[in-house]
Image (cartoon, rainbow, N blue to C red; front, side, top):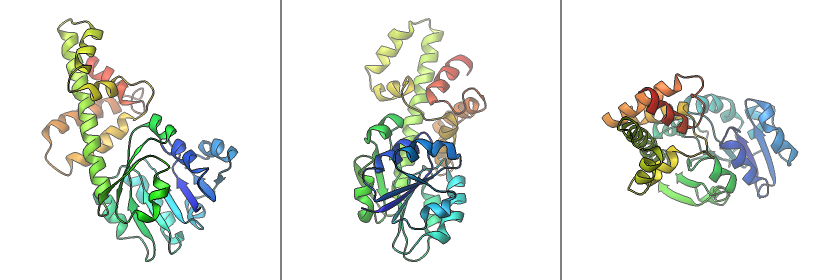
Length: 270
């Protein structure tokens, strides 16, 4: 059993950290907003005062943060404090370029693994996420398995790359369903009839995600992920999708809500 530090207790991080409580010799958590750590503290986790304090004695450090800028900021704080022999598992969706950048900064004796996840808050709470692990992940695979099945994707950065592909497809599918429903609205079709017809076809998974009510992935995060994708390759369809979610993220009532709220907005305003 290892000493584990978990940094980032947002919608995904908090239920993920909870999966580690039975498995760790000691679990230390940190979050920019300390109040979000209170529930885990009541269940036995130690709350660190700052990121460096969280990782100083850890065998395994896990970061689950909002995006590349947040990860870089945390890296500035924790890299001097990581001990030789430690693993740093970066589980945020940041893209392979950021992972490679981090790899160039990791001190000797520390192993960086990129292991973003497939799934949303419901699967995080149930320990049924899909883990895309790139790099030398063998030493932490048993820890990652607490979150769900682990798929070894290849060299360092390949997990982040595959996650970007998966998220791009999902977000694009949600936007496509929104536009299909907008067309159905314009044609005067019954909403339930149109939705059921789409759900019975090849877009069934995207339909389920577009109308989900028990998960959370904000429009701001969709903008971040699609921006990473469109800066990597020419993706004209995804550039149009990006504009949809940028408009949604500009709405303060929608920006941090699940992308299903953006579907409503696309149908209404686009």
